[in-house]
Image 1 (tube, helix red, strand yellow):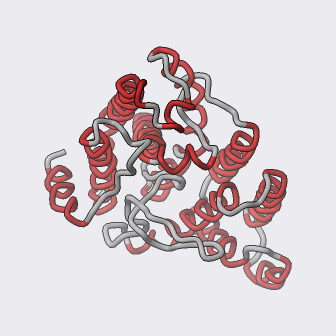
Image 2 (spheres, helix red, strand yellow):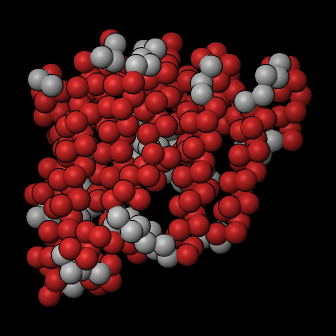
Length: 301
């Protein structure tokens, strides 16, 4: 149940020379082999769109134009067209490898189209908000963004696993939103210098802190800044704990992968706490040495 814009162990880098540190495996050996091509197709689709939205130096207008072209190719990919017709038209596509494999996954597994479109809406929102300097007013607005940016991935995976009941969907949303929030608080030191800010204004006001304090590493506001990050991390941990029972209803090896994903997110929160929540100063990453601890914790979920 990972978010495409969450960071996972290095895997499947995409784009023009863009590499990605990643917290969690994509289409790992724990994923059922029959589903790995579809999982990889979804990941490549989302990762490439995310790169369009925030990698490089393109202005917002160009990013949005490229995302519009990307959405048009998604729309075409979702049409009930024969494979032969698709192959003939590949030369007209900008991203044939992405949509070729995604199209196969859509037709083989009947992936819900709206969830794929929701992901693109999140990336478009990111491009607009970064350009305008938008600040999220409160946690509710931030979670509404997670509904587009993260939750669709979990729902797509549940669809592949044949898990469709309402409680499972709700808990998947909680896990995915938690992972997205964890990614935000993990990446403060990367995002803030690039003009991306997800710190909700209501939490900042509650602690009498401004975004500029984080950007300047304001020593006079250190304790208040730590309190902001601590509160936000506690909210993410609570969401993860609410969604965690889902691991017992996802079948087979996929359920074990979900356990590791959830524990990986919680381990990032542990690392931020070890830094006394100063993640705007240092970025926490999972290390190979964390794997035994993750496996042990996953076993006892």
